[in-house]
Image (cartoon, rainbow, N blue to C red; front, top):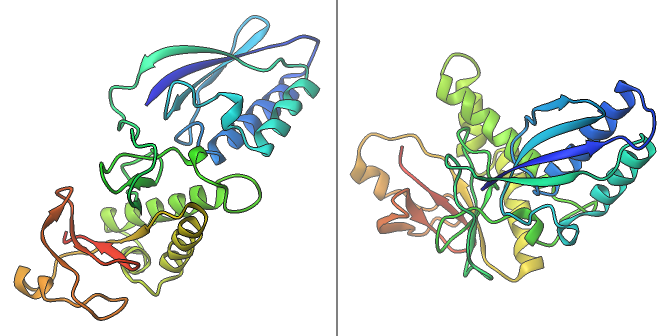
Length: 251
């Protein structure tokens, strides 16, 4: 991942409120396209311009070729608010972020996230590295907002069950049961992505322990009832994998 600064210069008089709304909308649209990552974008007002700091999957993530129609419309909104399109300055690689997947075409993909991650929730099955969402066909409404919203909900449930103070069991049900509303949403996203890309897309199910390791490994696939235990953990994380079903891990 890479850290960039976006400088929004004023070309005419504007109000702080008008400029703020235009910049926030522009950053939101970049986020829903997967061009910037995370949910907080520090923005400061300087003399005659505004500066935002963002994290991007790649050095050229903000290239116009990666934009959605919504990003283009938000850029027009900047002009209407008296701001120019942002000037970009690459500050360097983010040493605390995951590296972006190098594959031109992964052999399989995995929809996976956790409350610790702010990167793309779509991972390359070969390298377990995040795949920028703007590389993929859009599922609906011209951007990747549905995937981002699924990620936010999954991470919120993961945070609740990790904290263990409120709504732990309800949150665990959502991220660990294939019939939960959250899992059904995720599985539907996987099916649509697989149809549009022609690449197998797996869905991750969370699992907390069990009575014994032997009993856990003997569990049948919750989707088809067949065998799905792996001889060794995949990417040192996943203990189960089933084609066109789910991947799972023992925690």
